[in-house]
Image 1 (cartoon, rainbow, N blue to C red):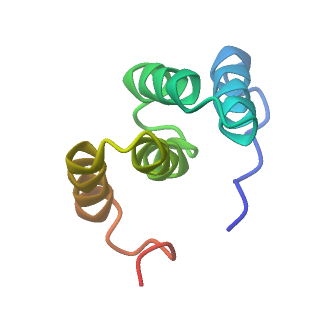
Image 2: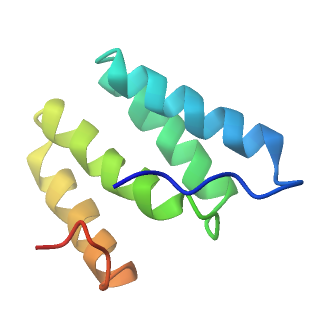
Image 3: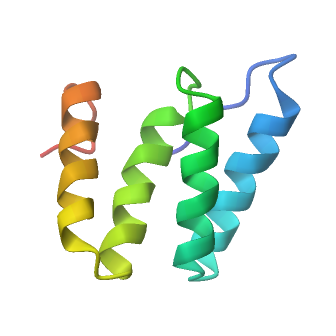
Length: 88
Protein backbone atom coordinates (compact mmCIF):
# COMPACT_ATOMS: atom_id res chain seq x y z
CA UNK A 1 0.00 0.00 0.00
CA UNK A 2 1.15 3.51 -0.63
CA UNK A 3 1.58 6.16 2.01
CA UNK A 4 -1.04 8.87 2.24
CA UNK A 5 0.03 12.19 0.78
CA UNK A 6 1.11 14.73 3.40
CA UNK A 7 -1.68 17.10 4.32
CA UNK A 8 -1.33 20.65 3.09
CA UNK A 9 0.20 22.69 5.88
CA UNK A 10 1.10 19.47 7.73
CA UNK A 11 3.97 19.14 10.15
CA UNK A 12 7.09 19.30 8.01
CA UNK A 13 9.32 17.97 10.80
CA UNK A 14 7.09 14.92 11.23
CA UNK A 15 7.08 14.27 7.50
CA UNK A 16 10.87 14.61 7.38
CA UNK A 17 11.30 12.21 10.31
CA UNK A 18 8.97 9.66 8.70
CA UNK A 19 10.86 9.97 5.40
CA UNK A 20 14.20 9.56 7.20
CA UNK A 21 12.93 6.43 8.94
CA UNK A 22 11.81 4.98 5.62
CA UNK A 23 15.15 5.83 4.01
CA UNK A 24 17.00 4.07 6.84
CA UNK A 25 14.73 1.04 6.36
CA UNK A 26 15.38 1.06 2.61
CA UNK A 27 19.12 1.30 3.32
CA UNK A 28 18.80 -1.74 5.62
CA UNK A 29 19.85 0.31 8.64
CA UNK A 30 17.27 -1.40 10.81
CA UNK A 31 18.44 -0.09 14.20
CA UNK A 32 18.37 3.47 12.88
CA UNK A 33 14.99 2.99 11.23
CA UNK A 34 13.55 1.47 14.40
CA UNK A 35 14.72 4.43 16.49
CA UNK A 36 13.29 6.90 13.99
CA UNK A 37 9.94 5.08 13.76
CA UNK A 38 9.78 5.00 17.59
CA UNK A 39 10.46 8.73 17.78
CA UNK A 40 7.95 9.45 15.02
CA UNK A 41 5.22 7.42 16.74
CA UNK A 42 5.91 9.01 20.13
CA UNK A 43 5.67 12.50 18.67
CA UNK A 44 2.92 11.87 16.10
CA UNK A 45 0.55 9.15 17.35
CA UNK A 46 -2.42 10.39 15.30
CA UNK A 47 -0.51 11.07 12.08
CA UNK A 48 -1.86 9.56 8.87
CA UNK A 49 1.55 7.84 8.70
CA UNK A 50 1.27 6.24 12.16
CA UNK A 51 -0.14 2.92 10.95
CA UNK A 52 2.61 2.48 8.37
CA UNK A 53 5.26 3.51 10.89
CA UNK A 54 4.04 0.90 13.37
CA UNK A 55 3.87 -1.77 10.66
CA UNK A 56 7.38 -0.97 9.47
CA UNK A 57 8.64 -0.93 13.03
CA UNK A 58 7.59 -4.58 13.28
CA UNK A 59 9.47 -5.32 10.06
CA UNK A 60 12.63 -3.75 11.51
CA UNK A 61 12.33 -5.89 14.62
CA UNK A 62 12.03 -9.04 12.51
CA UNK A 63 15.14 -8.07 10.53
CA UNK A 64 16.97 -7.49 13.83
CA UNK A 65 15.83 -10.97 14.97
CA UNK A 66 13.97 -9.45 17.92
CA UNK A 67 11.05 -11.75 17.31
CA UNK A 68 9.08 -11.42 20.54
CA UNK A 69 9.13 -7.63 20.26
CA UNK A 70 8.04 -7.99 16.62
CA UNK A 71 5.11 -10.14 17.70
CA UNK A 72 4.14 -7.58 20.35
CA UNK A 73 4.32 -4.68 17.90
CA UNK A 74 2.40 -6.66 15.28
CA UNK A 75 -0.35 -7.34 17.79
CA UNK A 76 -0.42 -3.65 18.68
CA UNK A 77 -0.82 -2.88 14.96
CA UNK A 78 -3.71 -5.36 14.64
CA UNK A 79 -5.39 -3.95 17.75
CA UNK A 80 -5.03 -0.31 16.66
CA UNK A 81 -5.74 -0.79 12.94
CA UNK A 82 -8.05 -3.83 12.61
CA UNK A 83 -9.36 -2.78 9.19
CA UNK A 84 -5.92 -2.23 7.66
CA UNK A 85 -5.30 -3.79 4.26
CA UNK A 86 -1.99 -5.06 5.70
CA UNK A 87 -3.86 -7.63 7.80
CA UNK A 88 -4.68 -10.81 5.86
